[in-house]
Image (cartoon, rainbow, N blue to C red; front, side):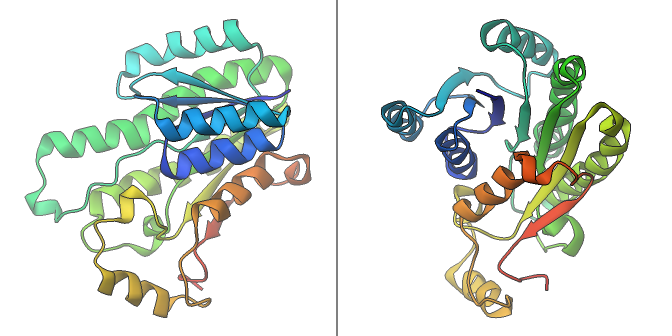
Length: 244
């Protein structure tokens, strides 16, 4: 059974990803600050199926200094780490000129610094095994931009650059590194959008609808699978054609 870490795995998009991977037979370690009823329910459902598994590990990823110990503990408990899905993130909405400096710093810390440092320590396990998959969850706003999401877009653009460079750095070791760029989907991070905003985004997309968390989860499943063994350094956009 492959061990896969999914950050922000207790709700929303992270929970959808964790559930899909566990249903496919993986042992998923859902890292989040708090365990939710939805995650407990998903773990019980997977256990009843007799296939994969879902384990919760409480941790605040803004504690950068604690990430090394987190990974060491996971390796000791579960063994070699095969996959890492860097999904946890903040999605603060607001004009840059009005944002507090502390909020910007917290956004960058969780959305950019934490995934880079977490990947650093998880990679050490992958390098020993000469195998592994890293998937970074970015966003279409990283390339297309969106008014009111300037700081958020900057953190996601950084993830894409990180993805491309790290793919070249570790490719010879049999490790792939890719990103998934979701469009606007129905999660807590998009509930600040007005109904008019949602309708405008739907009208603009080629498929005239929003993608769902299950669509992003399917993309992550693919990138972690053997079918994607020769796919690395890419950003897979899943947005129902909003950027087509």
